[in-house]
Length: 494
Ligand code: BES
Ligand code: ZN
Ligand code: ZN
Image (cartoon, rainbow, N blue to C red):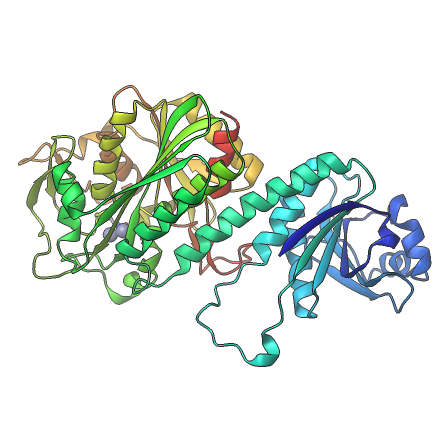
């Protein structure tokens, strides 16, 4: 989908579907008056007759019947003004794009009025449209007649301030495309997206300016004593990898991102029941989000030094699989009692976290579909946020506000830390029955380099959409790419 940004009046835009965003309980804004006249005042009438109320994501289509260069005008509700959230623009924009697709449009246009800061409006409208355009359909053999339902051009039309609006629109496009790139990798099935396949994907990121990628294979992991990822992968016929991506865009940082990349989590010998194993191809979502953040940071040319480390492995039950009560020496030197082989994410993350020390990072952010408990606590609505530095966590919360990717802080107290003590090793990999998200974070914390600010995002509930009621129209099925926009915002605000 190409992006074209230009200055025109609403009634001058030549397109298939022209989306106009309107508040609930609001008269037709002055800027749409001429357009409305040309449509025989159908917008005014729709509002007066309450055929269109402006509720969030409500739509009302008006065919122009040759009275305008646009074939159709689509009114899209963005809700009441006082309840107004910037995210409504993303949602309404996705809704409008999906309507345009459903009527086989090639060109879809958004009109940027003067609702509020035009650059934010423009960025969020483009984000919504590009995110709303995502669909994981590469394995569906489409009938000929369905094949052309692709929007070719996304137009952003505005009454002025072109330079500002264009820049913001392009930023929205980069962020949403990086998110869609991540979603596509996340949605891939485990038979395709193996550690080797994803390592190759990571390698491709070195095509970006100022990005270098190194892949550690089994021998490299052995040499570096990354014994926890080796232990987790030992039940799989496929070799583990760890991708290390480095973007040198400027002096800020370095900041290290670590993402869990379990390409399939069967649980290991502590095997999951069928219902819980369903969707475990999504256990690589944290790592794929890190890929997308590297891409976004490089394309936005952020003035920062960023390192992404993503351990990639399966967690299966093969003949050499690790067993409960195994004791493994980690990369950090600490010994781990593997009490439960299904708590594998924290094991592979531990090696990557302690490996990050060599970069002398200013901060570390990790992302992982780590615990079912996080879904119990927060549902599918927010990611769990834990860490060791209040100020840093509040930065992450600020970024979450801006990107509408919700996070909620969960506690990390000594009572949880104590639960990780083992009778036979330095640490064990599970705590008591409850508060699993906090005990998992307490485990990870032991491997974060000393005196380094650290934030942990448990994205088990937010990485993909399955059971959520009323999902947002820009993330309505499958992988969400959660965290790509959020963490990129943290980096931008650094
Ligand atoms: N990958 C799972 C966590 C998960 C569950 C992600 C549901 C997405 C949806 C993780 O490896 C796991 O199995 N965690 C266990 C930990 C337990 C054994 C301490 C869990 O949450 O049950
Ligand atoms: Zn597991
Ligand atoms: Zn897992």
